[in-house]
Image (tube, rainbow, N blue to C red; front, top):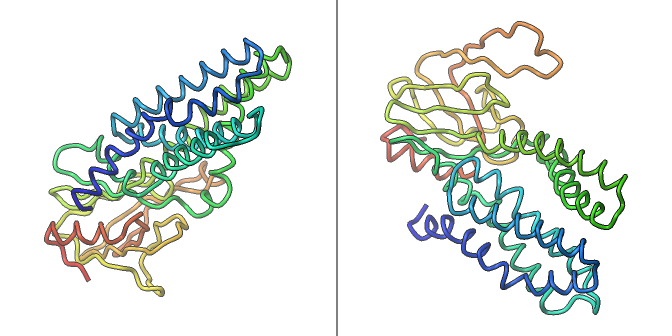
Length: 298
């Protein structure tokens, strides 16, 4: 990453999010203009709470903050779309502007540069973390469903209670608590998948494929490079979509693969490997870092 891209990924999400009361506030005011006082108050408290949580997370980069902004910032697009639909005189410039700004926040929060910046915000000492792409089977449906369930229940439950829809409101609010806790925990696992360069070598951290992190010391690294399509290296990509990087070892090492859910009661045998492949969000960044660390890149 260039210094400019580092600065943009560090500060752009926070600055754009900071502007939301000015850039999207008018749209939300239009949507709530003709609502009852309890609904207006509940919506206002919810919107301000989301904004404060997002701002704190954007100003303090870490893996936890990354999970937070990747839940909250896309949720702002849903809120802006809801406001546009409820505008008494139809959507106009204010609603369009709100949708544009919130969409920009969402795109930034989901970008690889922001992911890189935030996970390194909680790194230790002389290490550099590089995010991995999410597993293919997760990103093609389940991930979106979990997020939709969290956001929809969080927004709908309190608003139904404010509208005196007591039974559905209470049920959805209770469900929202469980969904948000379980969903946030599951989504956070995706924010803690990375390849780490440390002075001693490399560490691959991915609980979706490895029960324990794979630590490879510098002298054991034979080479690292783009994986061939017919590579025989052990696949640790979890089905992620994208270009794979292959790490080749000069000696064999043992890994303990994460078992399928149905097999978690069984004894898991270690597997000996001499090469592994995985899918970073930005393979070029990984190879550039390997060159900087004077590892063999091919």
